Amino acid sequence: MFKKYSLTLLILAAATATLYSQYQTYLENPWTRDGQVRAHVIQVTPRVTGQIIKMQVEDNAQVKRGDLLFEIDPSLYQASLNKAIANEKQAATLLSKAQNEARRAVNLEKLTPGAQSELTLNNLQNAIETAKANLLMAKAQVEEARLNLRYTKVTAPTDGYITNLNYRVGSQVIANNPVVALIDETSFWIEGFFKETDLEDVDVHDKAEVTLLMHGKEMLQGEVQSIGYGIAKADGSTGNALLPNVNPSFQWIRLAQRIPVKIKLDHLPQDVQLRVGMTASVKLHKH
Image 1: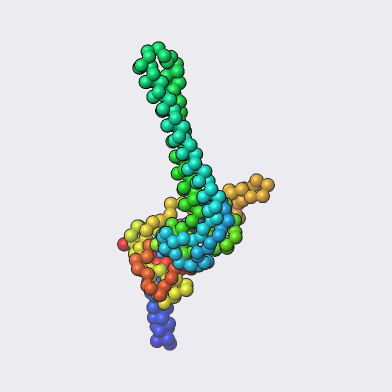
Image 2 (image 1 turned 30 degrees about the horizontal axis):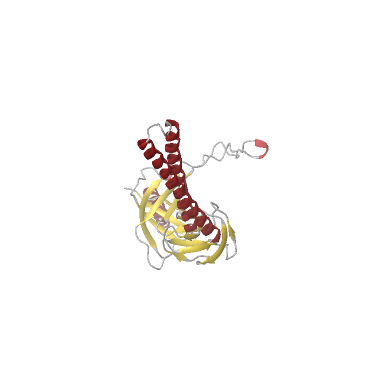
């Protein structure tokens, strides 16, 4: 009987020691399954309005910086450029005319003092300044027209992946309205949401281990890049009839809030492709 009780106590002690050891390990290395893959998403936005006449990319395609994504009908903007160039030539001609008239008046005044009044000479000089200003404006209009014509070709601002492309040849795009999302392939990071009670003594550059749900066999190494300084307040937000939303809670329970921790991966295996929104588990190693 004594041996039976001793064996039971020994098993209970071993189990207690194991649980305590696991708990201490958790305290020293907080872990969460609430993690996600994140990246910077660029909204590709045309700067001019028009109809798409050429589509050079497909949905979910990989692109390089400077690659042509699509082209907007340039005919209207080419016509605007031609008109601006004509206005520039006209302004240059008017400036030359004003300068010739002023030069003729000055020479006449030198040959015959008093032949030209001071008011006339001043008006001729003012005409030259006005013509110069008109020429500068015409040059600016030419530059603007050239830029608009160049903007009809929409290119990738960075290396990345095109996603959610719903436009085709013939679609009408509007200036300053986003058309497609471009995920920056150099900006991927892991964001883990840890309980505030787990982040004591956690600091930037602490080591981290990341496991993706899609690639459960790969253990990715990284480090803490930053820890969030704030989260949105749920209670008190405006609800129906402009009344505040207040979530019910128990007085004896205080739920720990989740704080985002940004993890930068050290190295990504070639067979692992990160995708925004993928689920990840994150384990931190405190100093």
